[in-house]
Image (cartoon, rainbow, N blue to C red; front, side, top):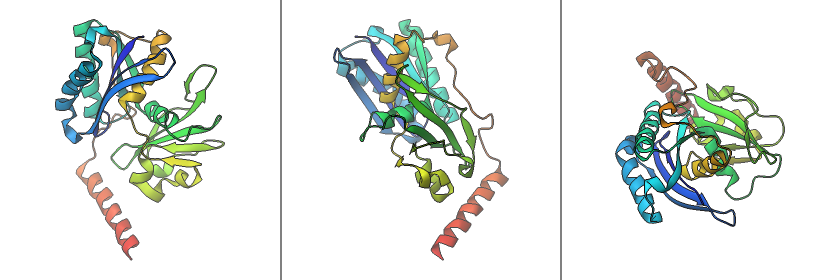
Amino acid sequence: MSWILAVETSTEWCSVALGRATTGGALECFSRHEHTGARSSSRVLPAVAEVLAEAGIGLADCAAIAFGAGPGSFTGLRTACGVVQGLAFGADLPVIPVNVLRMCAESARSGTPPLPAGTQVLVALDARMDETYAATFRWDAAANEWAMPGPMRVGPPESVARPDGEFWLVGNGADVFGERLGVAAQAARVMPGAMPDARAAVAIGLRALARGEIIDAADAMPIYVRDKVAQTTVEREAVAAAKAKAAAGEAA
């Protein structure tokens, strides 16, 4: 059974997992999932060493290394990509980029209760700068993989559109933006805890590996949905003023 190492640092969490499919089809996984804030870069390599030691294997025993390619924090994506490239070059391993929003959908599918057949998953993830990353996913049983009917988008939470038919809303967008994310009230289920996780990247990566969807380490690149990575001072002040106004209205 092939082992896959996965690294995910697109949010404030440092997530590392090492997993393989057992003969029964279940996922055997060793992981570290820790809220590190801006310290992911200093925690990720020790976490890799820990899961390898726990499994009793070396990096060269892995078949590939998966990583959260984006969208997400500019610094976090570059951290994961750089670390994985270094590890893959050193061990002569291929790389599997994994869409971060797809990880959220996978986290929801592997959780409890099970995702009903035919129910779509709308991922809404805090993109900072008062915006949301959003994409809709549908599980394709025939292909044994997620399909993404439309493009990924980034914009104000009010701009997130609901999919046709029944859907679950996953990701921290509902917690961060509250009523501004209007689609939350229309979802059959809201799962703010279904976030990017290296364990989900392992599951997605194993399916990609079986299909031969691997790339050379030199070709690993982050996925950016927007080019602008920071707000101006005026924009930050405007957002702060809007939040203060909203808070004052709630208090009244």
